Length: 334
Ligand SMILES: *[C@@H]1O[C@H](CO)[C@@H](O)[C@H](O)[C@H]1NC(C)=O
Ligand SMILES: *[C@@H]1O[C@H](CO)[C@@H](O)[C@H](O)[C@H]1NC(C)=O
Image (cartoon, rainbow, N blue to C red; front, side, top):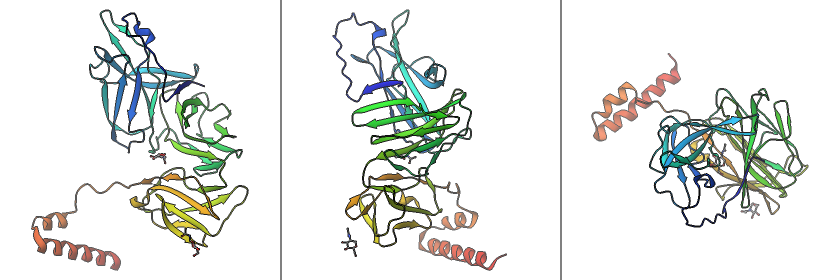
């Protein structure tokens, strides 16, 4: 166990000036925790009893495999510290860990480092991938799940961040065999898993839900690429295929028949969201299915640009005609 804290930490400081900085531990928050690739992330650092007068230093967390912890490296732009208690990171692409600490006075007196906080990305990092077997988001308790990062365990480790009830904790996978981490939980748990290397590389993160409900939704762990097909299904403990299943998307019934499977032949962005299934009155927990949107072309192609300049209704009709024309040419071949 690396770090243990409750969501409502009990911290009673007496407002005397005898509190030494080293007894203080700032609390870092990061938002959003699942940014879309390339989005901005805001870090906020709170020092209690008062954030006033502190200079805040911002760090990235680099895994320290030998000490089962992290070491902290100043972020570019965080070197001189900031008088503001928030810090914006632009263009965050990958999973990463952050921390902060505060200092004041001359010579400068520092607080402890905050606990590390993470932003998770679904974007695969070129250096690392994490696969899950069986490949689905939900699992029954006491059924084993294997995570594989396909790397060298002297360089990499698997991490888990769990929010179960009011307990929030971060821990290292303790059942490692080579590059495999095996989970065999006897209690329900919803966690985020990722792998990270001592050189500071992080894989994409996945959500895994372990539960003891009668029914389990089979849904993909990694986001589905726009246009690809996906099939969701439903499972009872120990039984494979079910028919007569009802599927819900964001709590709205979308299929109720005997097929037992929800097939989406070309996934679009509107298919993103929470799914769950129901069979004979049993309802599974819900899981998030992400959709990876393909980059759109940045500029409209030449004829559309030209016609858009005309504006008005005639312009719009011309655009439609041109699109139809290009489709016809495409169908007829070169
Ligand atoms: C994990 O779940 C959260 C919502 O609980 C969602 O925002 C996020 O995109 C999910 N991540 C993946 C990889 O599906
Ligand atoms: C699903 O369909 C069955 C058979 O048509 C029907 O009896 C049942 O009420 C439907 N369930 C829901 C939740 O609409």
